[in-house]
Length: 223
Image (cartoon, rainbow, N blue to C red; front, top):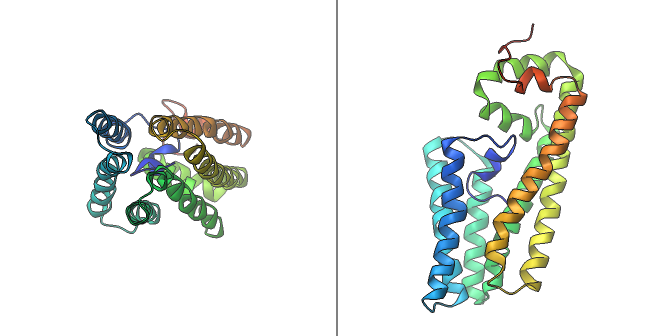
């Protein structure tokens, strides 16, 4: 589901230069490599391995550049490396097709596990993305119980959706022709993110705080 920095950029779907770069590295380049190499006569395993490299490099570079502990980013890198090693050792191209399921499941675990902490993952990621509203979000978190509850339920939705996403990817990877799955993979990712905007927006609107944080031109502090 989430390759490279996609997990962090998913909540709220910001239209940033980084987001456009991730679309190129995580979607366009791997697809071009896979179908290009297939057209040149390469086998499925070799073509898929080539498609993994850009996302793996991008994820590793992001971790080094940020210079901080990022559990989601680390899980992505470990999952991508593990799935690649298993696929090479097993000689089965379909093991690489399910690599994003290996990413979705750790992301789901980390997301749901974050509910045990003072602030859940979806809140932390969104706050980092909307840095100008960080102080406002902190003030709402401290003073508004409905705002806190909304983010906890948003986190539950994203965690459960990531589990479903992983199951869907495994089923499709082992039932569809290998050549179809790489093109379908980004469609699943985008569809999942778009669908998850619904509970995210609905829960924040019901809490009465959506317009305070995300409406254009709002002040950066409550009151």
